[in-house]
Image (cartoon, rainbow, N blue to C red; front, side, top):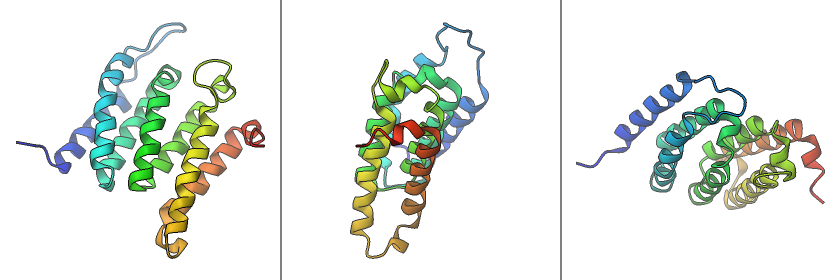
Length: 178
């Protein structure tokens, strides 16, 4: 039969543990051996965000898998990041879970060191600033729809955490807004 959200959550958590602990040594100029695996897995994770984005625990499990993908693959994951960001922003727009803001903060933290990603020297342009702007638009919409900000404390906390992370890790990027 079909899997329920609990079984999906358990499988995702097992996958997160695998990605956390199976960390191959990758030499300079070598491709990461887990990249093909993560590339094949990504469409499934994206579908889970769409289908179960309203279920906090599944959402948190998907973001945990993505967190360990980022920690493990680092710059090797950059070809997939625009897709990951797009799916994350889309799911945040639909479901409003603060897990997506936490995920955006993690993306800024991990990828701010790859300055080319911010300045568009190569790859996907001003993605980090774009992440912060897009998540900001959705967050402000959530703030506006709430009767009181106390009704959405996680979104408030994680949104300002994202802004703080961006200001600390991309101080030059903050000045790009004009």
